[in-house]
Every structure is written in structure tokens, then in C-alpha cells.
Image (cartoon, rainbow, N blue to C red; front, top):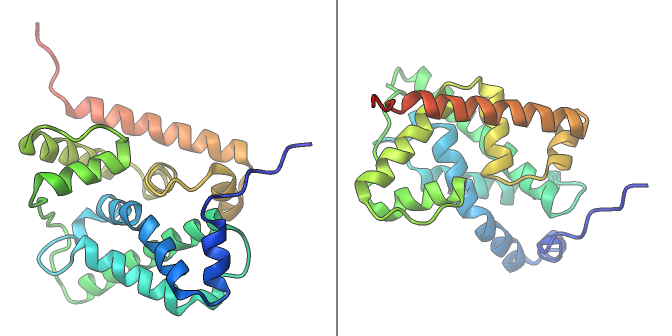
Amino acid sequence: MQAAPDPHPDDALLSQGLSGNEAALQELLVRNLPALETYVRLRAPELVGPRESVADLAQSTCREILQDLGRFQHGGADHFRAWLFETAERKLLHRRRHHLAQRRDVRRVQALESEHDAARYLAGFRGVPTPSSHAEARERLAELVEALGTLPAADRRLVLLARVARVPRRVLAEREGKSEEALRQALHRALAALADAIAASRPRDSS
């Protein structure tokens, strides 16, 4: 028999939050905010521009979570995290539709304005040290965004949920209606395709 997974360190905060402790719920959202902002930035770069910001989209998602908390009915912190990012996904879809309806250009990608921002987004996805150069950080971020854009939407979403949101595979599999093994294989294929896209975008050594 497979052993039950260890309790998530945020389970206690979630329990307190569901019991009406607003401070605990706010703390839980704050802990998830860096990953949520990274997810928004990489999932929908075409939305980030003069009329939208990563921070506003992430904060709007958190407000929706607070308003709809009664809809979260079961599961621990991992399930709550998955629900948070599913809410972000719906928010991004709504904003895309809004921009299209208003005939706005949704293809513009605003470059990040500081080395700190670029480094934080990259570190959130790859777990790498802060780049020493502003130009290098921007180049790596642009490379990642471009490579993600080559993936099918479902694969892009899966990669970001697994690597940015860090939703455990067992929870993703449950919410996607797949076996954990099928989910693992799908993630492996998506990551391999992403690696190929990144490699293909880099100039080859002619020596």
C-alpha cells in the first residue's frame, strides 16, 4: 500500500483560514504570490503591457480567491494551490477575451523594467542564481517566453503548473483526470519539447 503523502507545511494556515482567520489566509496567499506572478508572466506574456501588469493580474486573482473561498470544499494546501492557479488561468482567459473584444493589440510584450524583476522571474522558474547582468537576465527571460510560446497550450500550462506553481504531480493528475504515470509522461514530453525549443533558438557554434 502506498504511504500517504506527508502533510504540507501550509496545511495549518489553510485550516485556520477556512475557519475564518483572515490573517492566516492572507499569509497563505503571500507565500504563493511570487510563484503566481511568475506563472502569470510566463503563461500570458501577450497580456503584459501598458494596460495590464503582472502584479494587478495576480492581485486580482487573490481577491477572487478571497471572495469565492466557500467554493473550496476539500483537500489540503496542495489542492488549494492548484485551485489558486486554476483561478489565475480563468482570469487570464477572461482578460484575453476582453482585449480581443476591445480590438486591442494583445501581442505586445513589455520588457521588464529592472534587473531585479527579470532575475526574480527567471529564478522562480529555473531555480538559478540571480544573473549578474541586466541584459543577460532579459535575454534569458525572452528566450524562455519564446520557447514556451512554441508549445501547445495544454503543454505550456502543464509545464508552468508543475515547475512554476509546483503543484505536486499527484494533485495535477487528480485534477486533470489522469493517472499519475500518464501525467508524468505528459510532463516529461512537454519539458523535452521545451528544452528542444530553447536549444533551437540559440545560435550554433560554427567552429
